[in-house]
Image (cartoon, rainbow, N blue to C red; front, side, top):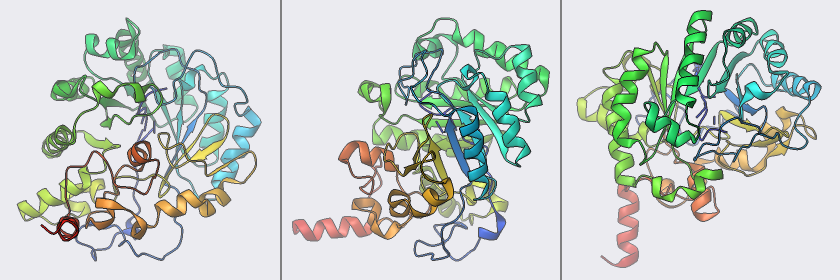
Length: 399
């Protein structure tokens, strides 16, 4: 399983084709740039993106894998009929983007039957894959199933990518898969996991992404889960994080591709800070989808469903909200404690609680959880110190 997966967001890095609803846009909150203020009481909103880990099995052994995937599927994975029932239950909430993720979803024999079923229910179906299994025949089946975008994970050129993914030749196999998608007329995006391993290569990776005809480039910042939890030497510092996000902001103003940082909620704080410096108001006209979305979406407009039906805020935050075998998804989405906690910005702690950007950033709740065992605590990789927090700390210390 890839560290990242969101098309449009297949979460996991494997993908985000994000959508936004214009009816949610207001101009009341300067920091929000169109998002509702923190004390919004309009009720629970339906999910916009849901990632389903179709199987825990994967043909790669990536160093940063969220799910510590192996060649074997997990015991008790949802059957075809259970998967279809899950999709029908999700349909009761609306028509979110569905990310068919993994593991490696193409290792599941019924994946195209399920994808077609979701398409016929009215979902925008997307696929998050490492790309190595996409033959010409598979690319055609992807198209016929109605899958509207595929995300392929690439972390660098051949040497970097193969080293990080631990399988020699997987870069070439992924490139062959991309060629087959192009031939079949299937839109694809590139997902890149950002770590100390490749942080100096991001500009080159982005140039390469444009060269091969991708529709978007999503950057996933390493979250310490699964095998990724053992990669402390590859984690970037808060200062390096900030530098990388500033670079992304600069690139976003020049590139022809859709850029999306994932598991990097501070980007939306930086975007507003830079826009203020430039004297530009953040609106859909000036900043596109970035003006209509926020940083951490987990439990707010994004959800994750594991291969055995467990529902979590995201693939990196293993706090159980419920299981689709036992409880209809709509009931889980609306009533789970963890989801309603995450929607309550007023209860955020530490720097995040005092931050004026919390409604557009929110901090990475997964990093907070893995650092403190409390998903409401402050984001550990943020270098920004809110003025209110600094004053509060000064009063505590008497300085």
